Image (cartoon, rainbow, N blue to C red; front, side, top):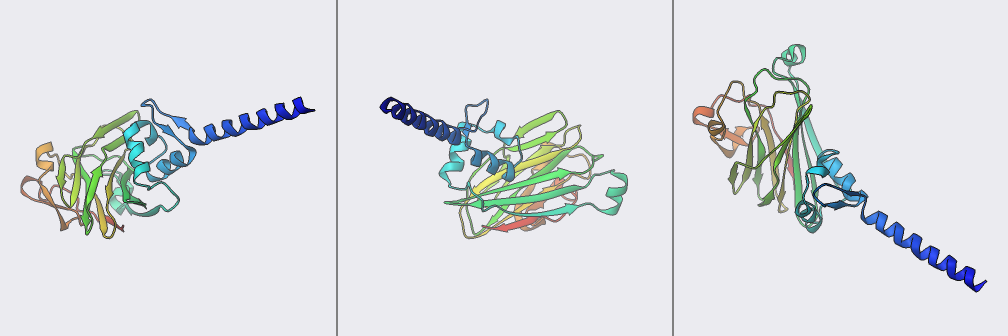
Length: 238
């Protein structure tokens, strides 16, 4: 009887350890980042299912250190799909969305998902403008599509904004994602502007982060003035 009790006790300890290990390591990516189930699900909601594979160990540590992982995600979105775009898909519609999750600081993401394929495939601009909060760090922008995945570092940076010039890929089902960490107590504005005609990389960066700009974010000037479609942006209080 004593031997049976010992075996049962050892078995219970083993099951507890196994359960604890399972809770702590749901998924490991190629970079060695180990995600719990809660972390994996959170990233799928803030970005998309598969973004986990792009993250480094440091990226995951930043999520944890900023205490943003949880069920308090707030989202806003808008569909940009004018009648002539919906009928012909000459320039393609898109859905713009922003998510936030706040803990010690706030993680804010923006994404643009295309519902059609644009004729002009030049340098589009995606990014954020802030008011009343500071940006502590920013992540690379990611462009996905059919058999396509590419990352861009922020190529325009200011105290009140981050911007990315994105070369629209020659593929379908295109989505673009970017994210920043901010302090709390202000507003984050997000915008995605599509080029109406071809523009160079250098000229696509001719803007300032300004409330009077396209989408409340990008005030284009010089060779970039009039080159973008000037659609509305989104905003979130953080």
